[in-house]
Image (cartoon, rainbow, N blue to C red; front, top):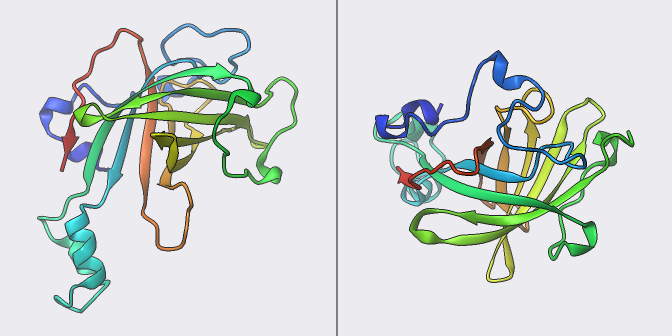
Length: 211
C-alpha cells in the first residue's frame, strides 16, 4: 500500500507483480548450482517506518482521545516514510559469519538435502551513502517456502534484524517480504515491513527517501 502512494518518479523502481513473477527462478541474473535460493547478485529493498514525530505524537501526546489514539492513522497528513536501499549479496560458509543470527524455530525448517541452509554476506547502501554490512541465511521451510533471515551492522555493531519469506516459488522475481526490527528485539522496539527483490547487476537506481 505504501508503494502505491509513491510519486511518479519512483514508478519504475518497484518489484514485479503478477503470476509470471511468482514462477521459480524468474528473478534476473545468473545462478550457480549451489545457490538454490538465488541469493547472489544485486537486490533492491524498500523499508517503511513511521516518522518519529508521528511516533512521538502517538505515544506521548494527549491530543484527541489521548495517547495511542488510532485516529492519527486516518489523518490525511499521516504518511509512513519509505526508504530505498541497494543490496549486493554473495554466498559464504557458516564459519565466515561474523554476527550471530536470531534462532529460527526448528519446526518450520525442512531437512530436505536438496535445500541445505545457505549463508550469505554483502553490503547495503542507502541514502546519503550510508553503508551497512549484511549477513544472513536462507533455509527451506517445511511448507516449501524459503525463510530469509539477516542482520544489518554498522561499524561492526548489529543494529537491525530482518525476517522474510519468498513470495511465490524459489527464486521468484517477486522477491521476499517480511518485517524488520532491532537486533535485540526488545519489547517496545520499532518494527516495520520490507520488500526485497532481485535486479540485473548493471541496473542503476537513484536511491531516495520518500516521506
